[in-house]
Image (cartoon, rainbow, N blue to C red):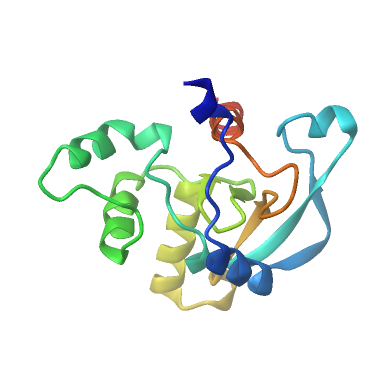
Length: 163
């Protein structure tokens, strides 16, 4: 079991390339993120602005795990990769919004910020204002980076940020 927990998460490199090309750093905006030993090392993560459509909902989100488990048991379980799956996951998240930058994997899966992404998209669709086209995010290390997250890192980060 520890082999799975310590395994690096799978990064879809084509989506990672899209994130890298779309991400615009917000000048002077960095956050101390409770990821691995970054806080103790004094590392502050750069905050970026990316189109909200680059952020994808994760099936493993702890807040909606009962809903996802129910769908997994159905005849057509969610995979998270289709637009229909993303819309269904979004329907589980329509509660409160978030104020802090979202945290995403290098290929766009949200670790923290599901509801914020949902609210931003809804505001854009309602108002068509440019300020709601993007979401502020912290992008975790990706392909080839020794700090690329493991499954355990993702679970710990999600827990720390949401508790």
